[in-house]
Length: 325
Image (cartoon, rainbow, N blue to C red; front, side, top):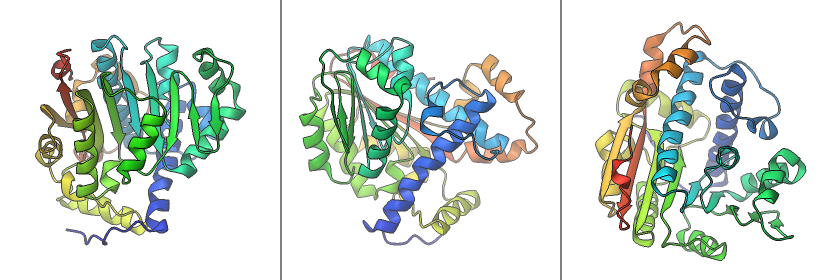
């Protein structure tokens, strides 16, 4: 297996992780410009469409966005939107605005990320009316809490925090009125893999202990023990980006075990090749006509090395364990 550097809280390592936020936003911006899915708000965070991305990258992001949204929307339906959503390492994600447009907003939508990313996102929101107007429309008083590193309104909140520092994360969520008794969905996309197994296990354990009715959706790498996985690790290491948590990305079972050993009641995991095959096939056929794919085998390899894992606790007996593809 590719050698792993010892994980430290170094500025270089954290800066490389922060750079992945831009990578994801740029890729999503390009894919939406090609018509893979509709996102009316990505343009306000990433102005330029940027250089062309390979068709397999666009299809990979399509599977990621559609797969995560399918589970998220099912949770909102089961809870009748009487719930909270917490997006961990949210970056420049636009889900809040999609949910508002579709009239399926939770009681409150929280986002957490590094201070520098939060500051950038808040700047975009403050200076772009298509982003700020929906916040104002869902807020009941004249004043929003808005400073350099946090934003708080009735329905949307952005918090700057390091997910490795659980006491601070918990304090800030409490400060902005998270309600542990409400059904709560936690979402992380390629986030836990940058934490050590001990750090990410503590985080998912804290969620399970604190929220009796909850769901956790985790999208990240899997099957990282083969040659393709080693190449992925080496490519990221060349960019100073070490996958500190890669040991939990060895298989679907290792992904599930992180949650089962932390007190979650039921856990499922599927690689993205399987998820892709279970998405509405009419739309899959549509997006496959957008661009010619030269190497289908490369797409399969890529999708087999990412997965969605979702875990539930259901004290309120809402039928959360029925959520799936």
